[in-house]
Length: 444
Ligand SMILES: Cc1cc2nc3c(=O)[nH]c(=O)nc-3n(C[C@H](O)[C@H](O)[C@H](O)COP(=O)(O)O)c2cc1C
Ligand code: SF4
Image (cartoon, rainbow, N blue to C red):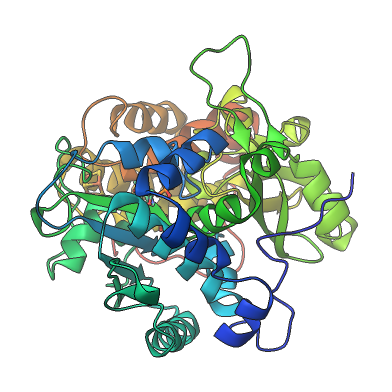
């Protein structure tokens, strides 16, 4: 099946980031129609009926989240745009922000109109300098055109967007970590409840949405729910709790492939299709040993699991945490899973914010053990100790404040359960990591 991209349709046009070109392509008409012809609840219902699920990692239904805001709240309500994008191997938000910022900003305006907010905080990953500059220029264009500020297009709707540069840590992407950081504090996630919809930024009701989610809002309001539901995977009739996986998705592919990149495809494409058809196959004529299906925190698929659909349900059926950010990373068959896991553990031990003892200590222990394995000093019992630690940290076992710990444990459990014989062989033979030397154990 050939799929015609919508979210990425404009990215190769000259000046795709400018307001003039965006408007020439029909941009801001959906917003203007909403202002003139719709009530906020109509926009909420349009998004809810389309079945849009959040693209930031958790897949929570977007319209439903909007309805959690208190009704007839007298004070301010805020929208926070989550553009922190620090999940390893994920770069779809960056492409949208650099190449088609107005598509996102139209979604921000529509979302603010829907949730009756007159202020959006756009929290952008610190390292994304180019995205920051492009977005600020796009916001300036909107003020100059009367599409931001007071009485937009002669209506009684006011809206301001504040672009806020992030603090440069993975945890700033967790929604309450983001809010704390926005408020000028260390990005320590908050205990929930209360969820941000009740008490968020500056203790006011707040909706946090991902960049790609908001780009989808624009397209839903422009093209309608039928269009959105004609793409992707409908709910599983056998599972009453399944909300389906409708719409397009931006899949990033990186790692050991010939042509890394980002492709817009219907939700439900397989890793095999992404690798072979789009990313030019595994590099150097090798085979895939493992694939990360949706950002590192989701765990691993084996070469036997490459035909699993990458929708909101597929990776979970193969023991992964979920679809996550749909960022695929390919590990070739000449790469040691010991080295891969050691890299993974380095990341999480470095990024744990340290508030919860199980996460702070657990990620550190997992790093020390995988470092021992990578030095050729692994012990037989290390594998079970790693699984035991991974099983005990996270929201799911109920021991931590946020999901970073679940995401740190999942790849460890998955790697050892799915590639146990390789780890055992490495311990037996005293395998040592090749290439760059290892730092001293615990020197992080
Ligand atoms: C450790 C951690 C990091 C996260 N990083 C991001 C991120 O960079 N971008 C993002 O949109 N969501 C991130 N999330 C998910 C957010 O908490 C939140 O669910 C999301 O922004 C909601 O937007 P959505 O409903 O539009 O998907 C992260 C979650 C965790 C636990
Ligand atoms: S789980 Fe980890 S990252 Fe999340 S709040 Fe606790 S210590 Fe911080």
